[in-house]
Image (cartoon, rainbow, N blue to C red; front, top):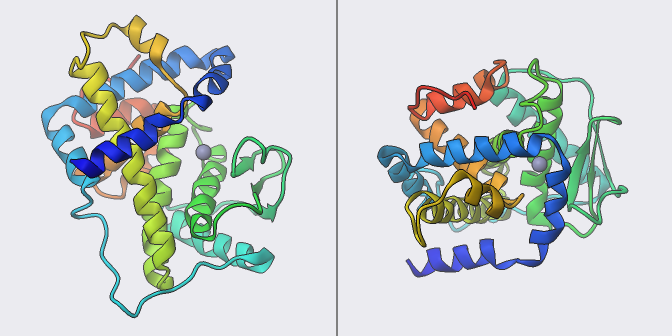
Length: 277
Ligand SMILES: [Zn+2]
């Protein structure tokens, strides 16, 4: 419980970003995103899903520990970046059963003051900050590469519902990083992936406790909307996909990228009936 409280503090502690990310409210899709987030939160609150969520949080089934002598190190440098992209591309492509057009990767980019890495659909390129820690590279590249796959998928993708685009990128990145890390004996990347989703899941569990389980009073859609922050999309989306994966297997990722109604399908996968908002 102590570790959980620490994760929650870490996830919710950074209040500075809160106001900044409110710029996302200017987008028309913001309302839809908030509705989708609330719907997924309600699904995650269902008893069996909540139990699965807690179980993944404690990563009982998710991670296989490395032995003492498997202390691999992530690669860095310009060549390292290319080869990490090649590997992650392979892992992600095999998960979503597709092959995508060429994508480039480089250190440096105009928006790096905002994000440690990002994908630009205009230039089909992934930009990574020089300041990024080595252990973050594999999972970050998998996440950004998934955005590339999303941008070319038939649904192109999910409109702009962050809760889906970021959720699926994060969940696929975890699955891809696990495979990559075991193949390369790269313990640090695996530890980073573990840490990263632990924080997301702690965030999602906390959001359920607050908004669905009435920690501090019942919560209307209006109150939810007023309190909604951009980063909640990552926590809720990632939790929803990881629970859906536990229930239905990794095949969900290729299905979700091939349907017109990804939110509806995700809600189905979580045992719900009606995913329309
Ligand atoms: Zn992203």
